[in-house]
Image (tube, rainbow, N blue to C red; front, top):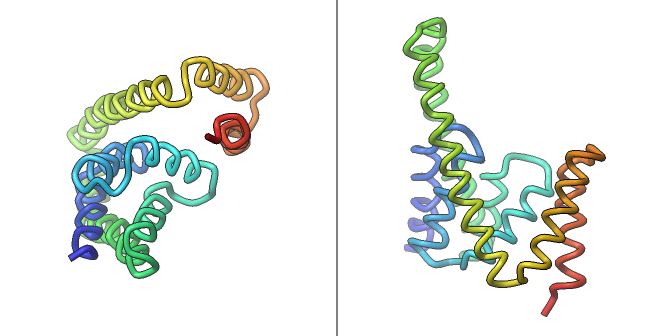
Length: 177
């Protein structure tokens, strides 16, 4: 039964999520944290931060990690398969239709309407991480990490993977309780 739950937890967000990783992450969080309770919000945020520091699509990394934590290697394979199958099926099924109507006003408008929804979902996820950051490590640490990250990204144009890596080091050294 756990394998079926893992499959559903990653298949559903990936079948209804449109817009790639940023659009799917809040849906995965809803399943993993809210519905099944395999992680709490803090663990999910840490997993997401670590996943963002590594190369490859975020949804498959999250699926592999959560699947492994819940049900070992088989669980990781089931979760990754559930993440990849929806994209593959939708891509094969809609490729011909989208190619045929690629210049259609309706197709372009549909894509434009999806962007604000994704932005709102990401804002909701960010607010959740913000409140979790104030509750757990504290406002001072959260502001230090956010400020230094912002300066590193905007002023010094440091690659985001390095910023996440140094934030993980900061958290590991100063926030390890």
